[in-house]
Length: 517
Image 1 (cartoon, rainbow, N blue to C red):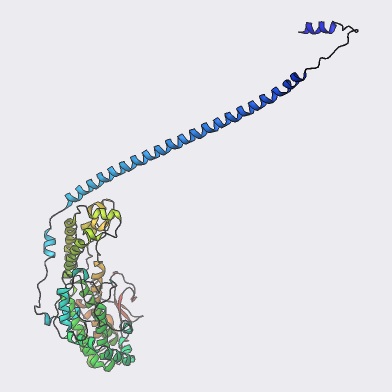
Image 2 (image 1 turned 90 degrees about the horizontal axis):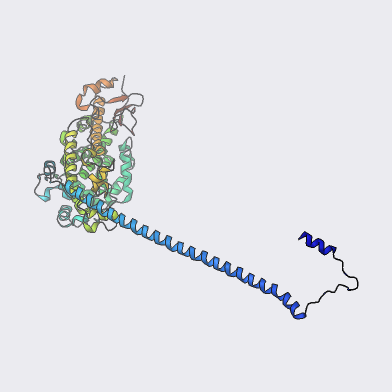
């Protein structure tokens, strides 16, 4: 190519023939100018078409991916649901077989503890329990007859425990007015009699406005008592009855000291009979509460410097420790076993689970080990009854007999009725037993107060406490009562078993009058 260029440069152009430039024809010139435009348009359209095709392909791939992912998720969810259902059915089947195999026949403890007590009274008209049951009946009705009709006619589902904090009010028409609630505060004061005397007008007004109820209470004090509530869900209205008891005692002291002591004697004797005869926990705790009220009045009297000496023997006789029958919780425990069996049967009915979660409704339709659970309750109550008969021995725990309350996962399988369904309420028997023993300690302390006040008085209080004998020792420890001379307190260690230096919130305490040197 270089040689050609050199030859071209070397060839001279003849001067006689000037170089002529050939002009293109118009058609060719136009054709020459239009060809690039068509090529550009084709190229642009091609690129747009390729881009559209590419976008379409991407969209197609995306849609196909979404469909595949949705199909995978759907199949996975279906497989998971199927596996879950299969595992659930297998689990329910295995658990049903387990519970079916765990079921037992009633054991000896269950048979012996569910036998009802024999009745000490057969004539309903003589039984003060029925009067308490119909205590709030209308003024034109006989309360004993009203109470008897309640035991016969009221449906089991309509019977309500009005004593153990169920929050229900008595359906009977007669009730004390709300202002009488002040009486409970007066009885918890250091010297209740001072309140009774200062509020004598108010006390007499209450007596006049509630003459029917107070007449019934005086009638009850003269009656025999036999607790016919064994195995029954309903109870008397304890709150109303305790108001009548407090108003009766307060009214006596609002008139004259001697009359007040007479009422205190009759009232305390009646409630100690109830405490001994109680077959149900509600009646037992109501009696313990009433006795505590009376002992508080007695203890306050023994701190008064103006107490007539002639009343000391009466008060000393009231401070008698509880006997074995009064302390016993055997019948209340047996009664509660019967009630737990009734509550379980009612709670496991198919129509009783309407407001429960779905899993609980499923469990209620499975073959639950009901009798095995009741046998565990019975063994626990039997052990508690034996332990309660041994002084200063703690009660056994329900977990050791019935796997409740749950501590490990297997407890839910071994006792589904309590741990899964939570049917029924279980009282704290340690607490209830402690309350009865506290009542005994309070009585012993009041008895010691009376002995310390008895002439001739001496400054050596521990010596007088020791001379009273073991019957007046602390029932929680088996040792003599403790003395805080600085506070002027004689006290028992109380339910917690610890010496809290006479703290009335933790120990059972009474005040002692200053002694002559």
